[in-house]
Length: 324
Image 1: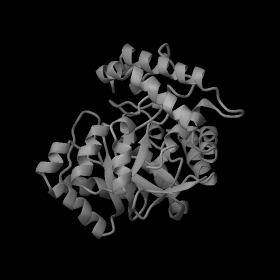
Image 2 (image 1 turned 180 degrees about the horizontal axis):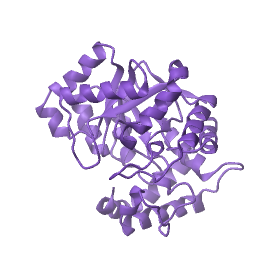
Image 3 (image 1 turned 90 degrees about the vertical axis):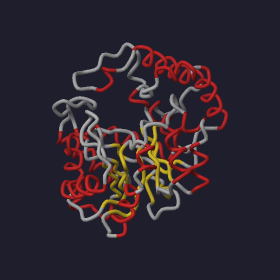
């Protein structure tokens, strides 16, 4: 496993991180990727440490705290080996958001209890409305205060879209921005966010590197998802765009010997120096092993990156109409 600095911060992350939404499982009234098995999740978390993954990204809302609890059960014996990132601001997926200092502080304290740790390595505001940050400066001031008191080492933002990231970089100096970025959704590249963040020393965490499974080679527009899977709510148009683009990429760029499509997709994210880590969701130990190997395979050739950009440019207008 290779490691990268998170921008100018003190944190050094494994290139392949562990996206922990999925292991939270399905909770009443909420969706993720369907039912999960806690024992398999724990095996995956321990396998991640075994292969050198040190970065674990979760949230208070994933599985209504269950994801954090599973990480906490592993962290009791391995805390010094782990860089744990969690989020605050969302209480559930119904839109009951609260970014006030009291709410963020309470959420952080609850996360600390579930994670069985005294500090968070990276606390991220979860999809905050940018205008709220501007009109309520106490939100960011509270993050600095929590850092000063040792509740977390660094703070950043997990954002809805790359344009929000550009606005944040104009006004604040977070350690990180977490954003969707993958072969089928390269908005963070095309809008200039990756370059701007690199210039400011802000680390990019690449979320959804497998584009919700459409870059796995196992999912297309005909796939039927199980109950509790958030992809059930997606439009036919969006699924068709992603499936068709994924087929074009695979047809134009045959995989290297021994390489999987999943590893190629992860290599794409790691081809950009501003990306500190990419965080595929992993539910089983064999998925962890496959994903981790991408770190040692190196970046994709520039010609391949340019070709992927052209494929995305061809569907950009349609994608803007149906983007998630």
